[in-house]
Structures are given as C-alpha cells and as structure tokens.
Image (cartoon, rainbow, N blue to C red; front, side, top):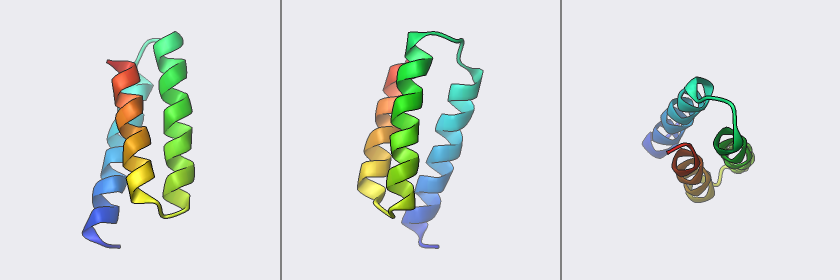
Length: 62
C-alpha cells in the first residue's frame, strides 16, 4: 500500500470515528452520504474523490 493509500485509509478511520460520536440528526445523515461516496471511491482506488468526499463529510459534521 502506498503512503497516499495509507493516509487515505487513516483519514477514513478518523472520519468514521467522528461520525460514530456525532449526535443523530441531519448533519450526521449528510455526513453519512459523503462517507458512503468516499467508500465507493476508495474501492475504485480514486484517492482524489475519496479525499473530497471525506472532507465533505467532516464539513457536514462541523
């Protein structure tokens, strides 16, 4: 696994942990949509799209 893939995987874990701690509500629902899109992009090995969706998920939780 390249260092970029490792960073992306760590970022996914971090966002997932933040999502798990978030209270239920529209922000959490919106973040989940972005997280699921990030999972699909990660499966397709598209790091740029994965990071974009993870950033959107973090923003939704803010």
